[in-house]
Length: 431
Image (cartoon, rainbow, N blue to C red; front, top):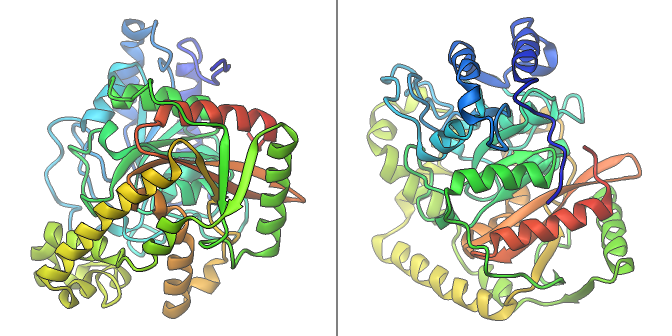
């Protein structure tokens, strides 16, 4: 992939100074984007930049979701109860790979507590405003990361994706979000929500920037030999029935351009997605988050976001027996195999989310919050449950920007990125 990156070894010092000035001047658009910055350490990285001058990531400015350990800093995971924990004594492996490639680490970005929501709201540290729509939510859970890229602070944001937490905020803020195959990027040194579904990946303003970050983070684990076909399937039986009119119009315009360029597109039922409707996907985050944070849940629940600790999320684990959870795991494995057999090398094509970013005011009602959260998680969570790789690309149409999502069976990562690069050029997205 040929691309002129916005960063360089020569410009890194100037660009870091500009970023520091914007953040330290309390620019309103950057409110609640970062929970802490690493500026002193970033200056030290600049002084050692010559050691990495041959790396394509040298001089790139990187923001880090506050789930990842960064040496010398406390990892809060969007919580108050972790705020006084000891600083990390080493970088999480994917963060270390980026540092070793000459990337400059800017700071920890804000997020939904424990990454347990697709909307991005945080009652403890505030919530960053959507970069495209004033007064609207950023999407989550990697909320601050998406806004840091969309606002031109970070070249690349590193986050996690359990049910869309990279791709939802990417779609809402007009950038690219890539969820890799889970096995290709280490999750050590990253606070877990669901060990079954969590994946680690990048967001950026271009596919090429996501690819270069992914290659560094995966440290050679990406599979370059498995190719996707240039054939898309739009499922008529899942996730396409409740689109807002601007999303529908933009998606159909993007599809028309693919067809005009010669790509084959089928609209058909995907049987594995009918089976997915019977899977209790909520078991994964509810049960597995409790396994990670049960002591806090029992003793410090008053310090937690009520929407995270409440009866519809972590509290719901009390309704799950060991047998039913094991049955959910078994059914998921069958679905992974069924989906892979049915899709092969073809690409699932859908809107990333069926709606435009809702206003903050609409999220004040708990019932509406819960409904919208499920709605935005539905389409992207396919990739997590089915153990796939998936990417959201921005597409601008009639004054609105949506996310168009392409999902491939697992371990097609580099080939999916190559296809996404071609589609990005065809669609000429907002950059």
